[in-house]
Image (spheres, rainbow, N blue to C red):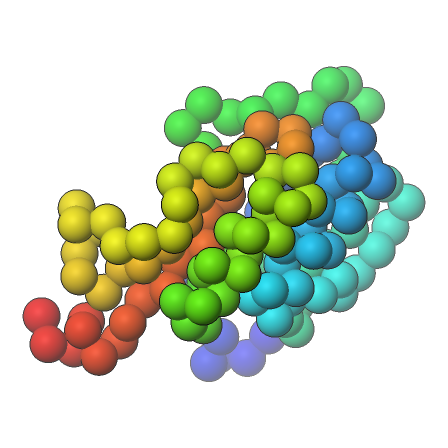
Length: 137
């Protein structure tokens, strides 16, 4: 990674009860944001644009995967249209809507996003931040 990388995290990982279903879901959903598989191991796939930032896999200890209460993963969307594409792809791939695309007044004027539960119940989000509105704050 270069010093210009704006991310503060190296990566996150989530567990799944059904690896093939989870990979098919994230292949469809993350492609709407310009992400792709960047690394694969038996029982684990990493997604990102350049780096393995978001991992999906069978838990290392082979115990059942569980969903964290209060945990969610937010992905950056390049446009409002990408937020809609993410939401639609998630629903088509077996996700459950948990907040349709739109503004959220309590998140500030620059925010536009959506929330979905993946097939394992993990809460995920796609968010577009309108930098022109953020600059006027």
